[in-house]
Length: 96
Image (cartoon, rainbow, N blue to C red; front, side, top):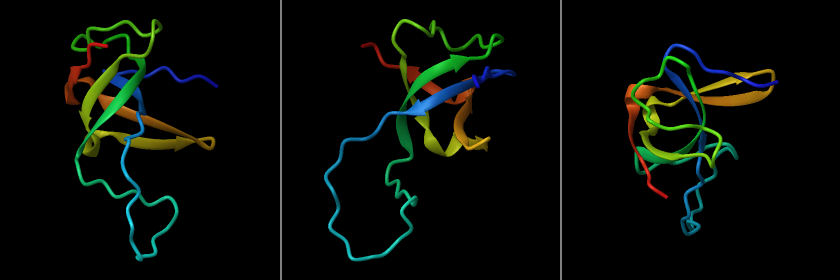
């Protein structure tokens, strides 16, 4: 099932951060993520048709953007997690 965002939302996929494994003895759930930096890089998967502030075309390689990850909404529907953010929470595009 494909998802098309509406109302100025952008569908994202988080780009995994390359970091060294931490040496810790604290037990936490497997799905718990510690985020020390509130900013993250995401790939744009789809853009709502009414988005005017995200100047990119999806399809020719997914553009990468900088986003405050606290503004990203993780929505789970039918076992699939969608990462959505309003276009005005995107700080900028990376020129690759």
